Image (cartoon, rainbow, N blue to C red; front, side, top):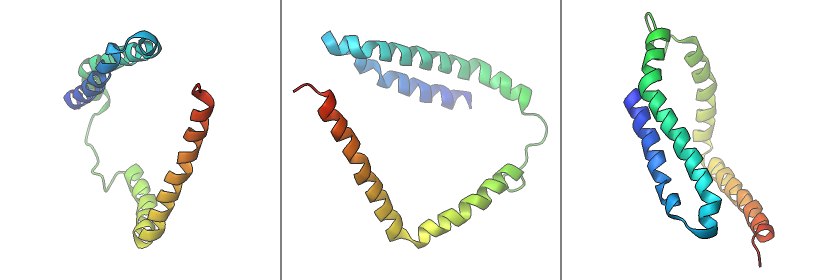
Length: 119
């Protein structure tokens, strides 16, 4: 758990490195975000390697129930299965709803971009 979480956080941190090369107004605008994100990811990576294994050792004790016997998993699967069956039966409607949501979400960013960008 620790190493995979650590490397996932490391990849996110490295993805913000190009932001540090920005200069002028863009640099002043985005560098605080990049520093904040990088420091929080570094802290999370440190905790994932040090604290998470210790907490797992303390809190995960005894026999771990298989997925089919865990009551929470059984309840979630009970909810999930009918939903997924319905989606698979109505594939065209599902695709059309997804396309409709995509089209509907396209308008607000365009409208706000016209208001925020200087002419």
